[in-house]
View (cartoon, rainbow, N blue to C red):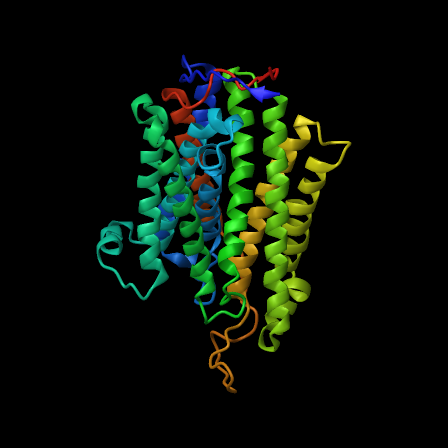
Length: 400
């Protein structure tokens, strides 16, 4: 079974009640996020759960998740153009649009959470190249440019012959982008939970899984919402890929923790995250490992559920939930553990290394994070509505 050989793309006609309801609901999420950002900007961060110890809160969890997922959402386009898999070609445009939308949502949260968004131009024009953050400015803006050009190559017939070289460049750029995001934590020597080179490949694996899970959900929802048939073979391939990406994520997460357990000075933070960290331990084992990886892998590969479209959708939802839990543990849990003020020396203080730092996210932080998700999905929804990014049919056709 293969996908249709002749691909006809078209935008979604009309302004039906379903589209307006979805756009309205996502718009409310965006407004809620702007409201939360306004309160934090006006009142200061004392209205949040953040402190001098927890300086990256829940908005950063959503921002990093969306940025990482943006890279993974480009999986299908890369598989189509770079590796020549024709089955995925009808979905390549949607893959690019979703990648750009997710990155826009993540960066919007990041800019609003950092405060003084009016000074963004300073961050974009004054660079300290000893900081990984300065390099990420280029990686994020470059990703927008590369994927938009890639979409142009795919959507303009005269430029189709350049799709493969541009797609190959986009594939390499997304690997570098996710490496840069993982290196934010990998290069952060002050935190024992970070400061390891394996963060970069682990973030690449997570991006493949998280972005692919969101892509699978968007494909299923868009096909159902626009009344376009979706073949079982397409769903089977996509959900099998999801299972493989989740297994790869689980492998790199295991390598990261085993590496830290081998280093004597990091056994304390590992004991905190894996056994004694309360909410962080629960989120890691139950949220990420159990709900986010093992259960979805079982759903997509177990004979009893392998052919179920509902099980594939549920696996994707659980992968997203588990992904957010994993990012929460990395960002919040890594900061909650006390700092080692002078590595290798006996030193004590009263602020930065005084026990486990408490953190409870405020409603404003959650609203801002969900606002970023709403913005990403709203942009993708509008793109599907006004641009020919979705094929008329993804139904299976018998192989000749």
